[in-house]
Image (cartoon, rainbow, N blue to C red):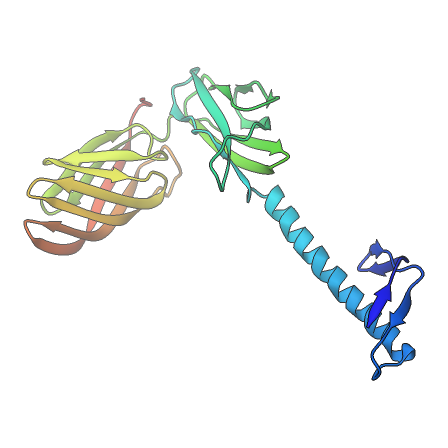
Length: 259
């Protein structure tokens, strides 16, 4: 069956053309009386499918599915200090740089400048408050024809700096970490452990006698960032041809902000 269409029909609040609708040919088994309703039903189904695909593409475009913002969080900073934040926007699929309009909105103290970049890439400057124990969030929004993306950056005057003490068996550390919210390192007995940063994440380590291993960790701060806490970790490790698992335990004691 063949149809012509050019009028206005409504489907879920959207209009599309169906004026001058007429069947110009139909099969021998179908009459005009039953061909037209079937044709309209087919048009509605096709239109609904098109709307769904369009909406999915729109959501992907709006919610960071096409582009991403690359910018480091200031993390733990000294009171009254300034931190430069380089910002680049890239396409998620081919990795190319995407010049974008960037808006920066600060929640907390003290300031971020500029609050808008007409075209990335560029650099923002965060100025921290003069008092310790303060925190802030910088919300970045990048918009271009290729997509829209958001990223939240965090900053705090102290609170993220800790002395981390503990371990498991022969692995023991007593390391000052300037910001547990960023990737950090623990050392001891020739072993170096690289942790992903944040209140939970992953780690890997290497050391003497071809020792190596990977695992996960969790930090507990019952009274919040900047207060004493603990960390546990666990995974599988090998040394000298032997493999074992276990649970590491650490204490976290706040120290003065450091870089």
